[in-house]
Length: 342
Image (cartoon, rainbow, N blue to C red; front, side):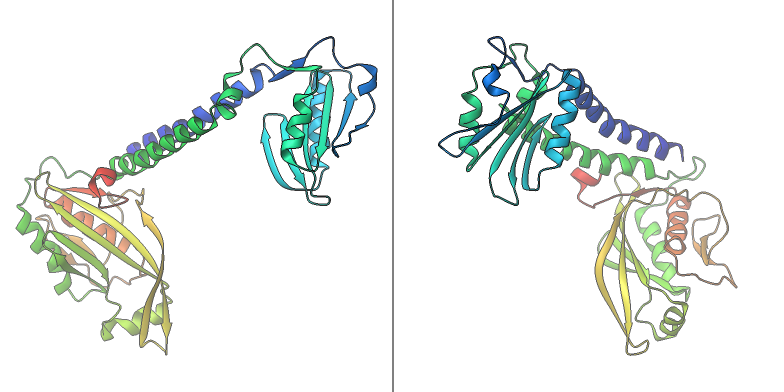
């Protein structure tokens, strides 16, 4: 389906593009800290312990790249039960000693600080006179540290937009318009055609929950079909909610699937947790005839001799054929709440 391909491509770009931009900025942006005052003196090239319980250890390497890799390995070797990592700056709490720590590469050095508390770690780091913030701004670093709250809000807003795009774009991609040559029937005629499926003695039927909304589902409580369904091994109950929108000649369809269990032989069936609700991106055009299909006038008709497998398509396809055969648009949605589902 061309619409589905366009939708999935656009959704992939909407997710991948921001991630790619952030990864590029993280890889190419300036380091958050640089050496100051000529760098560390010789007294820092050995571990130093302080009266407040903190300690600082500096390791020198041949290049900034070696220092960055060494900092990663050093951090991964630490047993931790808490980690806060931004770029190459890693803050943690050790799981063996409960001490707090900081590991970061600064040019060709790796600085490691440990102390009894996190504030003490920050105080000891701030007291290092050979380290300074980089005057060249790294906007991603600023967003993740100084503007973390605002950045989190922006990410949340973008996620909500992605959810809206998923719902509305998915509805657009799954839409099945009627043939242009078919004049649309009125809403009552369409309703009667859909409800007529229930008179065909097939394993699914439709009921009207409220005016303008029909529900199609397997006849799980019908004695004539219960034994057939139970012995067939059916484990999923499919339910289709059809919302008839007369103003736009559209039937909005919400599909739900439930796990079912057969208890006490085949006498009891119970709906359990809904594990799927959404849009099925599957072409409904053409293909083999199922148990029910629409005749040229859009009315439902039985295809004798069809052996049901109790698959969702055996409900979905006949419904879509009746809808489009009546000159209406078949519109799958993720929710019947129109501002989101469309």
